[in-house]
Length: 391
Image 1 (cartoon, rainbow, N blue to C red):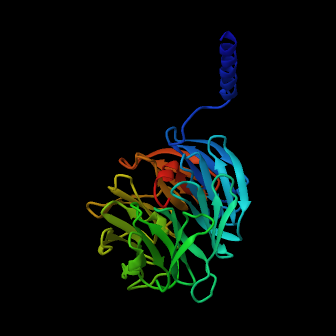
Image 2 (cartoon, rainbow, N blue to C red):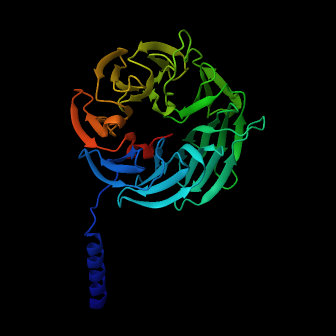
Image 3 (cartoon, helix red, strand yellow):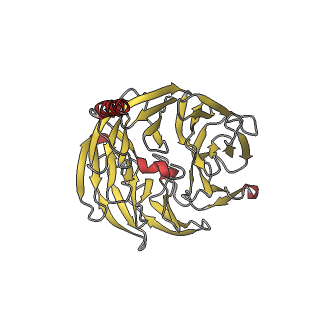
């Protein structure tokens, strides 16, 4: 017995010694900001409003996004050069990196956390990988009904172990059932409208909406009732009236879903649209400072923070949803590319690409409460996304 106790003590001391050089912590208040010019990311701490370190060697991040593992320890970085990189937030190192395509536009992680899917412009299609070791599981070429290979946009995860995405040139929406990972079951919807440029899924996982660049409106698919097919909604959403040059397309992932309403940028116009999230009918339009890119809802749904395309990308406006009024206009600096709220909404973080810094604001007082240096920062992604559908 004494020998067994001595061995147990030695094992315990060895384990403690092995941990001595590492801080024990959770990941719920962490996040990542993309540094697009240097091919690196910074690991952020929202509790301390601090940067914990940098991970370099991630390739072309000129248009990059991130999904998180279910335990929020690993960030999967989707680079423009076709790179898929798995980054450990705790050790702040690259676990695995593969070049899976020519040009990619984003990705998603499956509801069970076992699969990572990447949307590709070139060669056009979706590739699905094992989330553990990034080995290839499935390759889904995006060949439309007319035989044309298309760019894939708007890739999201959906309940039922599914991925949903749109084909730009073909004008189609596909639903991939991944319950048999190596044999995806595809449901294809054609004739949805011209040139779907992006897609989003509502927070309850029910509706997938593809924004149309080639015509007005969105293509709406009820994932609870696929047999009903794709319907058109918000047909006045786009560019009726004066048509302005579109300097940057809005990102549908940034549509602010606030429970009963959704707020979305009007393409090519200086306004945002408020729609009823149940019937997808327009409720109101609110004039804003420029062409909106992201409309991001505070977690409580009271406010929507909006940034803009050039030449108004130094401005951020705050929409009070109950009154449907702009209640604050901020000028943080040049090149505000992205906004992200902390998990409970007491902070909002802004990336300022052209000024090489991140600004942190209190959304109640609109006061700046912190700033951090960053090299050409763009997307900010907090680990709360690990537990939200479509993010």
